[in-house]
Length: 156
Length: 95
Image (cartoon, rainbow over all chains, first blue to last red; front, side, top):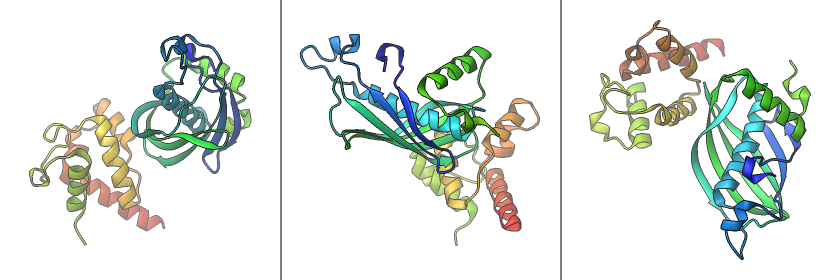
């Protein structure tokens, strides 16, 4: 993870397009400027970044299910619970499932576990937009390579 | 069994916290009830689930943006309900 760049996902562990589920991993760094303020003497992953991590895991799931034809953009956090703290050095396992495919929007549920223990969960809504330009499409393709997005997931 | 309008009005009232008695078949979801696009996603979700259909919001939005349709055709509730009935009938015919 590079928190300052919103690189929240390190690796796609398992993407099941047919079952519309994904599991990703994210290693919380030991050091980050984020932790200098949140909090001095007690570094802690901000809850909003946990939500962002679940949103990004959900995003990769949708990119797989919709074959990179639409870009999911977070539109609503229907529910979010931070059930336990996440600290520097923790390895987060994030799972997400697609709960509804609408026309131009989708909904997911996501969970974060550390060491098998549930630390956060959320229900999220996304709008699905065409990629606005080639730069963004190209950037996402590069990130896909970095996180190990299975290329067969976008093959016809 | 309640009518399509009754079901849709109940969904809107519960989803958007709008008094049920202010919602009529001639209400325009956007202009009269003040429902924005994000809230309409929740309504679409509830309609999709309740009627077992997929409201073609992208297609409708595109038609409105292209000037091929008016918002009244899709977002005045009696018209919306007619579209829902058409989608339900088409689903039944293809089943």
